[in-house]
Image (cartoon, rainbow, N blue to C red; front, top):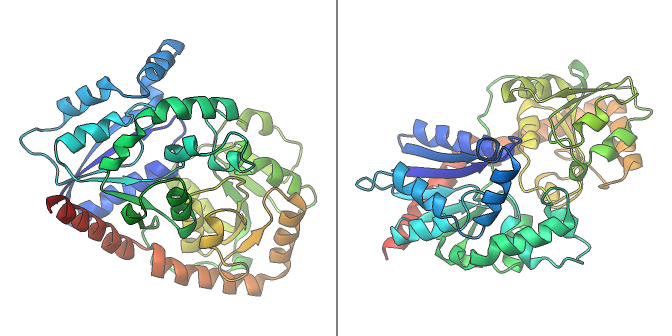
Length: 374
């Protein structure tokens, strides 16, 4: 099978890029041909002029059509195209392009941008769907402009989302129930014996340094915790917090994924304090795989992934006192934490390993191609 992956990279690389790379490697190892066409905000939006140029085409981008015409061999079209992100460079125009070529289209819903325009400005949960530039007003304006041609999503044959929670949100916002498939993200299983809770050191946070990720809640929770907290990642709040006064907290900035994964493996616990509706956090899966306890906020998809005190520990989002209490419980109960880590590993193997993911992904591709021919 010939698969084309299309993606728009952000300035700060994250889970979407991890998924894109992992799926390409998985499909290639199983004998498929995978090509990628990737555009990058870091490369194409470097100054104010390029910001305005991007905004001028955010509804429908002719530049995107020209890029596809140039990059795709018109005599050897892919069997299916898998779109991962179209904002802000690609736009809905590429859906129009592939539909006119009669190529089956699958799109992974990594975030909620496609339904921003369906959320009321005054909705109390507005912030939980993620914001553009951390601004409610900018999100409202940009989403209305960006989504003017959202009717083109009618040409998408299948959407992929990650949990029952995210599926329910997309259906409630008007996407076709029949077109939405649940396929969790995955990681390659590491065949090794994980360290016990007592053999591991410190706590780790590995995500964007921004308000919606719960970084402020986590820092407040750590005031009297006698455990080092190592923070990896970059973001708009990095410079504000990197010189914090707590001697047990240290910011390390962006590091390569392999390095961070090793640190997750060595840590007693992964703190995941997000305060918005995450779709499918890759660091949680990495911690499951490495036998590292996850202490996460009980919000959105996370409660679909973690059963409290079974394969992880949940705390009330935005509540530093509850997070503080759960961290201290873990430190006092290493035997129970080992049981939780064992359960998480079993669930990882059953739901989030590469073998299970390949079966789901290739089934979606084949069914989509078959339906397109009918």
